Image 1 (tube, rainbow, N blue to C red):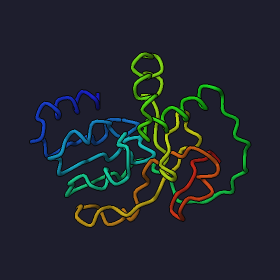
Image 2 (image 1 turned 90 degrees about the vertical axis):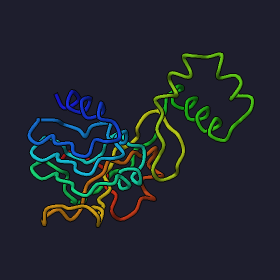
Image 3 (image 1 turned 30 degrees about the vertical axis):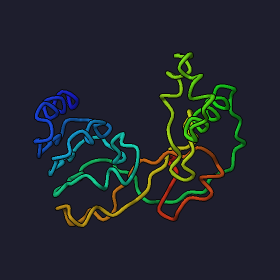
Image 4 (image 1 turned 45 degrees about the vertical axis):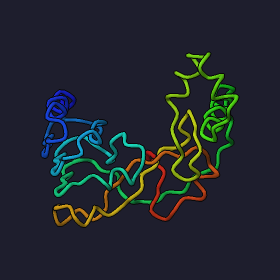
Length: 191
């Protein structure tokens, strides 16, 4: 239902200024928000969203939305409550190792791989699902850890008084990167 409302908003294209999904029982932020550059008001109140993260690739892209009003009260947003983590050995399968190597070589514009990848549509399809680690910036296929970073809402947004930090979804590729995270980045754990 939420996606249908967004499809209607997308038909308005760049002129869409308000998206209201209040009480629609959605569980994640819509992935199409970055396609609405004219968006001024985003109302996601009273849903089932645990973290604010459209499938926008970077935190900066979310914060750069030209919102004037942002509402997310009434959602079970993650709380900023640290728990200790146990280091786990990282054992990647061959597909993950190969995908990471290919994606990172393509990012460096390796001429051999740039030419060869055209001949392997299955490989292109697999690596198209890759993500970038928020900490190191390298590409990976399988999410090692989903985290949230608590950031203040933009000063330009009109928000309710009790919204001080917004939990944004962050993906990390390894324990090494997790141990290098900043003080406002937390792994998601069920306690």
